[in-house]
Image (cartoon, rainbow, N blue to C red):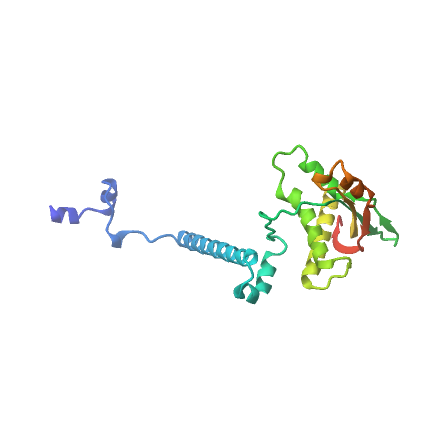
Length: 235
């Protein structure tokens, strides 16, 4: 019986559902080997990136410590502006003013004439997207507002960037305005200017009392930012 089974051909073994000996098995195809290797490398890179991201964000939100101070430059470069954290769970800071952020564009025609568009209300677009929306996106609610808050923190009353982060926030704010205008209006332009109208509001406890009158008596502040060059749109 042993001699008979030893002489069985591989095709007969397959017909009977038996696996051929190891030395008779076909090697794996090179494409499958490469696919498995590529998948493994991709998984490892994703895990490493996720771990690095969690570590850097943790150092950003954690109380100041020797490690966060030593690597503050690398942490800030990774976190700002896309992963900025602003945790105020136990100390909320409600808005005390209403801001209307508008933008207009400038285009230089081939004949040398300069065309300036009318003002485009960026805040109104965000408000209309949030109103009557049970699940508004984080981008709609916070992108423009946080970009302006970061601009105030890095520039104050002076529109000259004094650091690389200030310059990055300035470009970030200009790109937001340029992308939204391009998506809504279209057309060609090379520069963009922002106008911010700040209107004080009364605290909730003071509504109907002297606080409301005091807030109403404060004049609205209008701030015009310089013209900023942006990536050419519509060309």
